[in-house]
Length: 283
Ligand SMILES: [Zn+2]
Image (cartoon, rainbow, N blue to C red; front, top):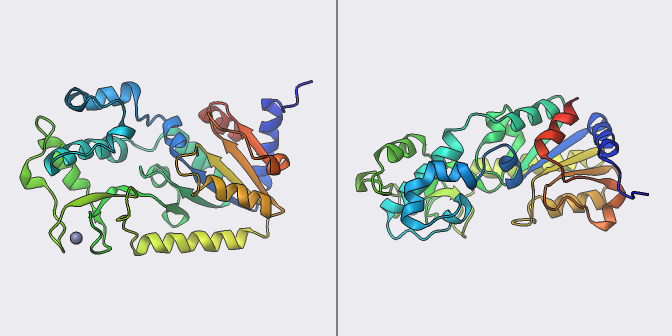
């Protein structure tokens, strides 16, 4: 006898939970945007980064993001292209649109490590999204000398259109308006990540949601969250499932879908194709 429930059994159980939940908390990780088609490697990477691959031997956007570019002109040429193809070019993807359709009638909240704005593009209410790790669309002082963030769309588009030989013109290099030092994209990659007022407001709204939901039927829908930064979504979701009597975890993850042993009866795992599972939730 197969001890694992079949796909259909898990699907029915998950749909039942989603339909009867009082509160729904979506946790979105890198695997979600990848499943949505925003791949950081393969054909999509080769298509958009040919000159950078030739110049630096990059294998994918994730590792390229850690490259120590020797000059600001080179750093921003790469990053402008990276931001353009992940943040400004893509419209809302089908998977995020279906996800929105799945949750829109619920009292929901989104906790995400993704920085590509797909949740808001797909119609999720901005006040119900906490993007913990930043936003490709914002710049900050590289040394966090002040806590203001700056929209970078016009700058990024100018950089992309004026990039030549993997460099932008020096005239486009941004400088901090306060200390005059270099700027960075607002991504949590070192101790200088800027958390502005809006970030703190989102954090507070998230805390309020958790407090409200804790005593009711809360369903955690965890999507593509691996072990890169498990302390933000994956572990807290497991802890809440364990500690709160009416909290349930639905985990979609192609590589590590299993729940912890302590939550065995309260975790439904899907290692199947995420787009397919979300579509099936909607049937
Ligand atoms: Zn500064």
